[in-house]
Length: 125
Image (tube, rainbow, N blue to C red; front, side):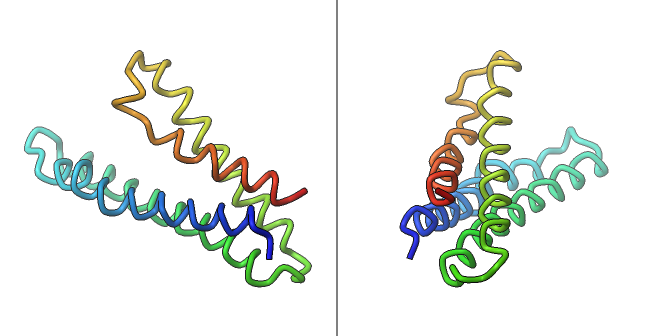
């Protein structure tokens, strides 16, 4: 078993749980309760929140399949895809906060994907 890919899968599941439970309470619920947003804006943002949920779940699944089926011919493509997801999410979050001139205490999410991306890269070698 590739330990680094197993860790990447586990961290991805952890990130998914954080997103779903903490994000649902602190982001999605207040979004839906906001009376100042138009219906269109509110529900498009809520749809995007669910897209992120699916993307993180997919990332966890890519790493999990790579761990469970290491001899599969496509395993490296799965790991590369999962790692690119993680690295992209990390880069977006890490560069977005300073670009918006806000603290990482307001937008810390990108940092959660750094260890996933690192484990993906190490797991490929």
